[in-house]
Image 1 (cartoon, one colour):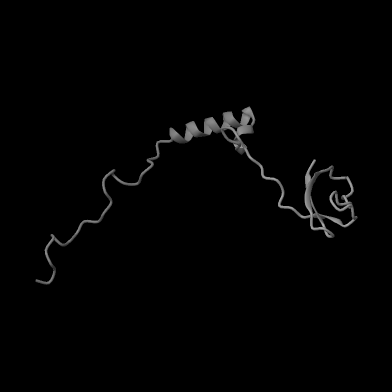
Image 2: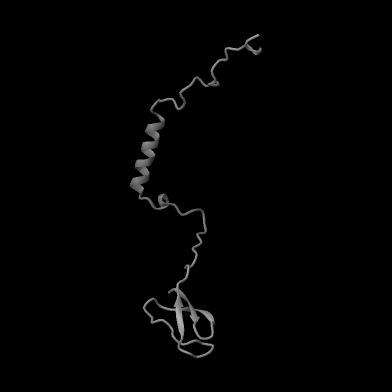
Length: 103
């Protein structure tokens, strides 16, 4: 059940009410007693997730997990190199030997 914010147009009193979605909005102000209360549009409640994590993959089926493990094993055993170089620095060799050019 949601919590609704109300504002009395007569006395400007604001309050919250815990009501069912299907319940009619409250019209009577609890302070002045006038039937000038209006339900306000609120930002909604915040949601706090606690724990190790809530990821889409946390709830995958066992068949999906087995297929993903098999796919990961086959791609790592494929023999393709991960880097395109010889492992060294890929900077081009300098033509200048450190001196000023044009001397």
